[in-house]
Structure formats: C-alpha cells, structure tokens
Image (cartoon, rainbow, N blue to C red):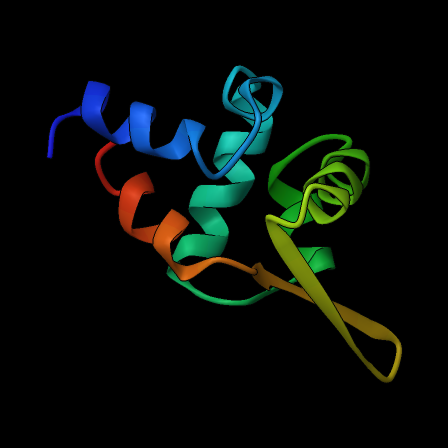
Length: 86
C-alpha cells in the first residue's frame, strides 16, 4: 500500500490532529514494533508524556502499570499495519 492510501485509512482510525503531529507519529511508530516503557519513549521524544496522554485519550494507545513502570502499546493493531507504509 502506498503512503497516500495508508494516510486515508489512518484518517478513519485517528484524528487529523494526531496525523499532523510528527512527534505523535514517531511515538506511534515506536509502539507499532512492540510495547515500550514510558522511560524508553521519553528518552527519544521530548515532551513525550503530553503526547502519550493525548494518544491515550484518543484511544490510540493503552497503558499498563507494573510496579513503578508504565508501559504503552497501540490499542488498535490495525494502526501498526498502516504505519509501516508511512
């Protein structure tokens, strides 16, 4: 699938505001590979917690807590498939 088709299909799953933000897309790409600890995401993306909270509020990511650590993953597996083409 080419990039334009992937973007069109993503529009049905996430808001335009999410798609237009490079940092949120980077975080989603990271999570498309595997679940990650918040500390790992924060190291690579400035202000990641703000973006993670927004992605969680939109239902794009889910989090789970294990002891003192918080892990994030994509809530919708179909998003991961589309991110490959972006």
